[in-house]
Amino acid sequence: MSSQTPPTSGPTRRGLIKGLGLAAWACLVGAAGLGLGAVLRLISSGGGPAAPGPVDLGPPGSLAVGQVREQGPVALARDGQGLFALSLVCPHLGCRPAWNKESGRFLCPCHGSSFALDGARLSGPAPRGLAHLALQKGPQGKLIVRPGQDVPPDTRLKA
Ligand code: FES
Image 1 (cartoon, protein in one colour):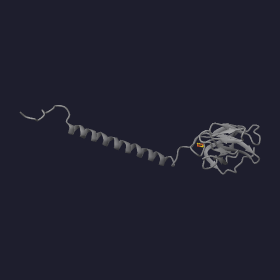
Image 2 (cartoon, protein in one colour; image 1 turned 90 degrees about the vertical axis):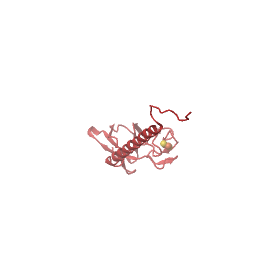
Image 3 (spheres, rainbow, N blue to C red; image 1 turned 45 degrees about the vertical axis):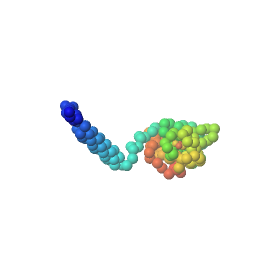
Image 4 (cartoon, rainbow, N blue to C red; image 1 turned 30 degrees about the vertical axis):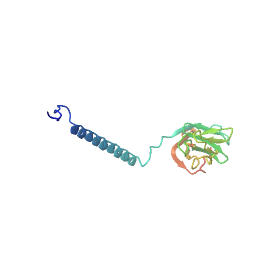
């Protein structure tokens, strides 16, 4: 009487292991290709995500000193020196701060950072203030702001 197992006609254990090894290798090569593609896209885009297009804020209207008008990712505000635009992307982790008229501050809902009218950081984990954005007058006196195009915080538009 023999204790050998009879030969099978299906896949062998060795063949199954070899097949799994090839599949794992194909996954690794594919993942490396995707990673290389992402790196190449990042390099070709200048090292960062594409900046959003210009935002039309309309005419300045009757925005008084100390007032804020929010539009999407941008706030238009006026202080004693003139008009300026702030990015409403929190420099902590990217949430959207909103103007709080009662406190006279921009408040970030995520982790409690607060910012003054001029965007300066007042409290919370944000490492710096809100970015000032390039603001210019366009056709028919409309104000155009360019998110992603930062300017020094003392930049003002007289309007
Ligand atoms: S994202 Fe604004 S405080 Fe964290």
